[in-house]
Image (cartoon, rainbow, N blue to C red; front, top):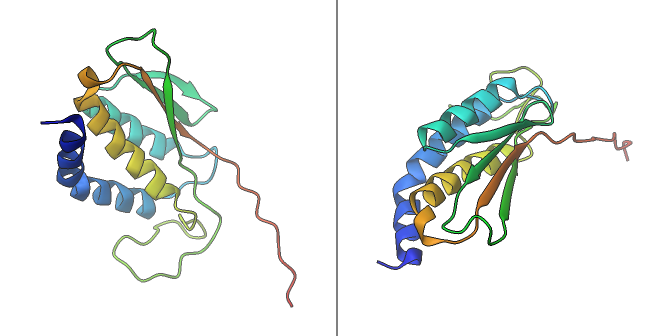
Amino acid sequence: MTLLAKIKSLSESLHGDVVKWRRYLHTNPELSYEEHNTSKYVSTQLKNFGIDLQTPMASTGLVALIEGKNPTSGVVALRADMDALPIQESNDVGYKSTRAGVMHACGHDVHTASLLGTAKILQQVRDQFEEPLNLFFNPVKKRIREVPPI
């Protein structure tokens, strides 16, 4: 099986997990630099995949490394934002935010879940690529400016 075919197959098999991770993150949003539970959740998933954390970053962020076949051949970096926004969710869905005034209206729950899925796949095929991969899960300070009424 080619590497591309293997990645496609693994992607299809992980779809349900990525949806589950995204819904968990959407239900449990945290503001920038307050993502303590999010960091714990992400680090637990990475450890379950056999990926070691390298270092904490920016207080609530994480850095992890997946070794390729040739650790001196350069490096590839992938990143995802983890923070939510100070917005009240009005959607009526089963995975609605449980925190008043905080929600993932920005899509960072999708960023994080997608990078978790990518990490799991790349960990499984790490013997088929050269470069080491750095994974960054980081808080991002969003600035929302008020727009005056028209």
